[in-house]
Structure formats: C-alpha cells, structure tokens
Length: 233
Image 1 (tube, one colour):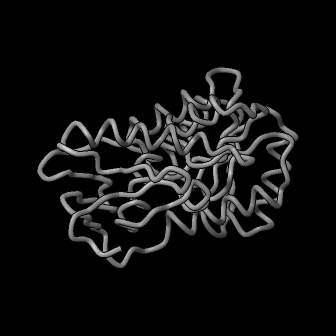
Image 2 (cartoon, rainbow, N blue to C red):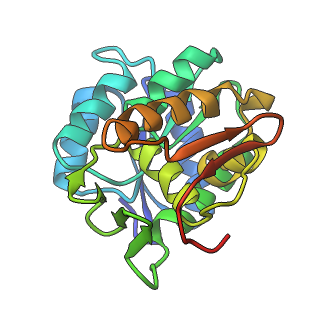
Image 3 (spheres, helix red, strand yellow):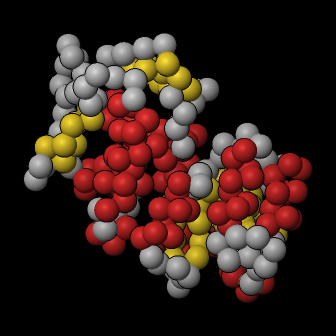
C-alpha cells in the first residue's frame, strides 16, 4: 500500500475497476491495495489489516458474502463495503447479515464510493467518549462489541449491533424507519424500508427470549422505540 491515510483493500476480479477505484481512492488520500479474488483478499487482510474493504460480491473463487463470513469468524472487525451488480433486497439483507457495513451497486459513481467510505470511517474510527452504553438492563461495550441483557450475553451481527446501539442512544424515543436507515446504514436503499423491519425482527428474537415483555415496541405509522423503564426520553 502506498503511504497516506486510512488503508483500503479493493477486491474485484475486473482489472479496469480495480484500477479505477485505486486511482480515485489514492487521489482522495487513502492508502490502497488491490487484489482480484477472495483467497487473495483473505491473505491481504492477514498480511496488513486494512481499515476498510471494498469487496465485489461476484468473485471467481468464492463470493463476497463467503469472504466476509470467513473474515468475521477470524476476528476481523473493520468495515466492509460490498460492490455488486445485484440490486435485490434479499441480496442486500444477505450481505449485511453476513457482516457487511454498506452496499453499492454497479454502475456506481466514484464520488459516491468515496463519500460512503468516508462516512463509514467517520463512524467506525471516531473515538468514543464512553465505550459502555447502558439502557435499563441492557449494557453495550463498544470496544469489545459485547452486549448483555442483565447477566445474559446477547450475540449480535455487526448490523444488529449498530441498530441496537442507535436504539440504546435514544431510549423511550420513537425512531422512524427513515431515521434508522440514515443513522444505521447512512443511506436509504432507494427508499426500501423493509430492511429495517427485518433487522428489528432479528433483534426482537434475540432480546425477547430474555425478557417478560418486549423491549422494542412498534408505534404503527411512526416507527420503533426501545422501552426502558426510568430512562429519560
């Protein structure tokens, strides 16, 4: 990687796309390394852990979702931005649920790619004043990515973690789907709010098995609220 700012790994099997992204990202001040398949991506992460990966979904040896699952299982926590020709909601859900952080479809704007990367890095690299967030019996450690409900550990995917974090930072406040999309995903999936319903459902299943009453409430026509007794709205 050339010397510069945050380290970006670009993974795409098309040489012209690798070159285009590499040139644009270096111009924007990033350090860039490029590889053409999933195996090379995994090796590159082991050699020099990047701050963010731009990862094509359709690779010759394995798909980007499989690469992401392997990286997350190995303990890699830096954000992953998917790059793909697919634009179906199910594909977006699969990608984000596998551990991705954002999703851009081809053909793409280079300015959009750079803006997305900067937005993700602002969120993930910013120092937190207090690593531990508490909302009622929920405790979230932003450094270790551990979540507890009372004494019970709650295993969450990266996207579920970000969604719960936003809810915990706004206890007893109704949050619209648009607000959740903006703060958790930082873009609106072309207006498709179904992804929010899916992830609220995932969170509820994991939380409700440890409680007598649901923590996340639906306010029909308005949005969702994390109900925390005694917390200030």
